[in-house]
Image (cartoon, rainbow, N blue to C red; front, top):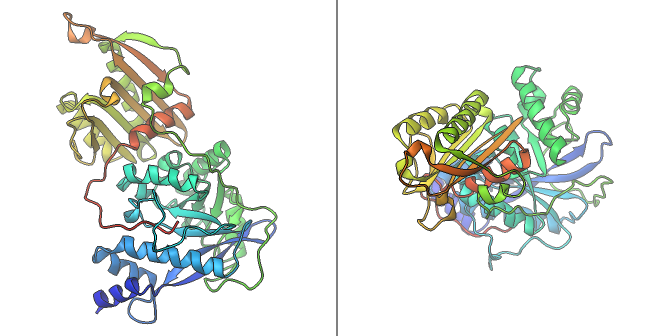
Length: 420
């Protein structure tokens, strides 16, 4: 029954969007709405059951696309226009969507609408090579980005710099539960990122005035929850918020290698392999000390340089860090347990580099070296030109260029072009 009902819902586009307001925590004015999906009356009316059925049938991306199309159409028909903002969700498993062209079966975002796409850190950890280019194509089309459910998984704190969200949405637990060490850690990381980038902080799950007070203390300026309104139809009157949600449409360039992205910004040094090994090991120790707040990504030129020692170390680190990646020629998809790999073509410029990047909420560093081609001496005496930076912007740029090469662990399910 659920399978045939799911097919009917997707094929006939029977999704009913409802909308929950986002409210300025200081002025009380509504600044936008989040679109939420409901199935038709029956076994799959509840969204959790609907999406679980789609996931089980391998049709999650199709359902996700239908839901977003329905949300944009309903919001446009309901008169939601700039400067108000529409928030729509993208399922992590549907992150491989092709945004190169508008799907002829659906319209692009109508003129005059401001849209923010919500994703979770699961989208980045599962499909980075798909998601990062997709995010930049969204930005090119004027669509903003929100990182959702921040605080559910502490990995999201380490991954914020890679997504560069316009909006950070705090999970409801952070506003509803009493203060504790975990809440303080999230607060510090989010505050630091928002201060550096200007990202707006939204608190979800606000049901009481006490929750609203706690959200303001957490640095949120926008609130969402039953205290301000339950999901339902859009209001008849248009919104004209005095402080619209700011969006940054500037795309990020990911095509440069770490060496090229740092080059010219930091002094070029020269040292032996013995010295560089100690520098790289110190960065690995830094990552280990940072724990699940850290991302560690390295290049090894060729898989044969990812030795047994490296495989053991990186496999162990993958159990405690937010994300661990290893790139190189002939590198397998999972070179060690839990480690995300990427196979580089023989002519890829990255095969000429030895890179390590570590990124965490309060720490960032990148090391990049190029072999000078010494022959005849000992291996440890071989010389490299190298660069080392602790500048956050440079380190994140280097790490992001590597993250964008990491392929999914599993084959993607069938996807359709999105309506955004």
